[in-house]
Length: 107
Image (cartoon, rainbow, N blue to C red; front, side):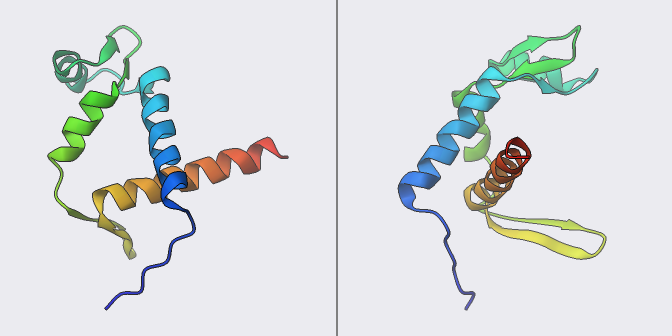
């Protein structure tokens, strides 16, 4: 059995997820020149093909997450980095990004 540790409350986790969705909707995500932009546009993303960027609406991201497997493993050449449920893994990534942003802002 793996121990479960949580550094956030349920309300904090919901806030992190809501903020992540808001960022994906309001900030350009760079894809460059690739076929993915056309697929994203067809799925409902606001796409600027010339700039190679897209803004991803919450509904699009939620549909994509619903199609993900319940468990994921992120690894590099040294082995596993993060593993667990998709939502938990994304939550950890977003939490780390927000912590890095706060640390940079306090310098």
